Length: 265
Image (cartoon, rainbow, N blue to C red; front, side, top):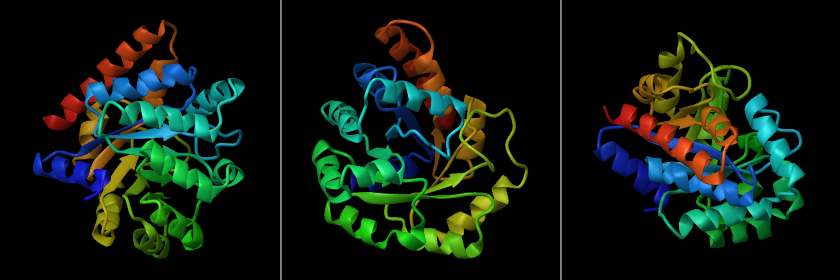
């Protein structure tokens, strides 16, 4: 059983959804992002997403765009993000997915990068601009290195796209709760329940919900609909607020702990 499978199985046995947290690699700097990732683990995250910065993050809203810009100003590369993975793996068995765009991964050489990612302890790739219908070759490469692929689905995804993503996904499916880009939101769509149920019915792998989750209350609500809930921008904004590295990590740990408590109620 892979680390991802084991994490979801454990959460299911505990009758709760998995908490998936996101940190941008290299923001506020490489050492700081390691501290924030470990703070998420200490706060109770079940899975981690480590962002790979890109200059044109089309799926991301202002908070994560700015995080990517800060990271790139430090010269962060995809391989630097593997150092964050290594830091987590040295302290924890929590599954780690690298979330980034296709261009930087292809520029790094996907075969080589996949091998290095697996050696660092990564478990999966989440590539927002990789369509499941076009993922055959990259999926084969990832599989050779024991890495899962995670695909995104939106409220506007057709039944055909849902079926294609379900066939291609080997880790979990990431259901985008709102139309648009990432970012905290005060309200979520009223038809979300039926849309998520349809995706779960078609999927052989777990389904998590992300985009727009900003409070423990929202996390608890969405967690009741799916196998897991993803919190990204709300964590990134806390990690970006002023303070020392330890103060930022403490702030993120406390917030993640509040999310974890909400999902255990």
